[in-house]
Length: 189
Image (cartoon, rainbow, N blue to C red; front, side, top):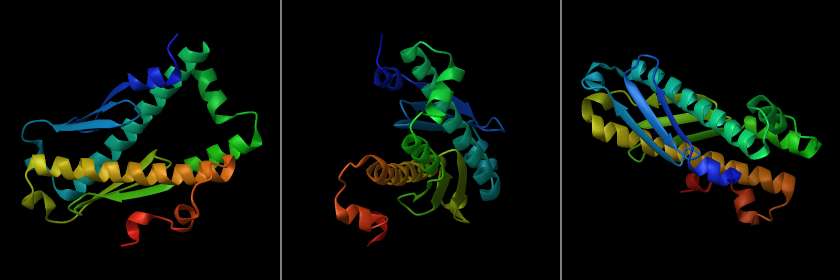
């Protein structure tokens, strides 16, 4: 039987925005993400509408990844998906429950390399995407998608950094003091 990590490595999720104009393909535990828009869709968007569609797309993507995670757990432990979800959300150890609660409350933030797209996610489940006004006029679709993906990666990095600090708090990873003191080393410059 494959391990949990092997199951997650082959995880593939595809989601579509509510308006059916943007598709995301997610591989693994959101390690690899591709975005594509239907022909002509980019030119029809304004920033506010696209922010909403991307926010919903990210939420749907995370939901798909979580569903895939629970399917993988169910396969590995030979239980139903519902039982796997209960095992994960209600572990017998109080420390694990407290850790899970804090993980779900992490607010991760990030921005694109060009600074035109910002993302914010609470518990990686509730997303808000912001686009600097005028961006859609300045960037072509390919450049814009690259900005979206870099903002997504930045949010993921911030979330992972906060997860590591929580793991250190609850499970004693011996994270160096400098990483525990500086909330976010990316913001120190």
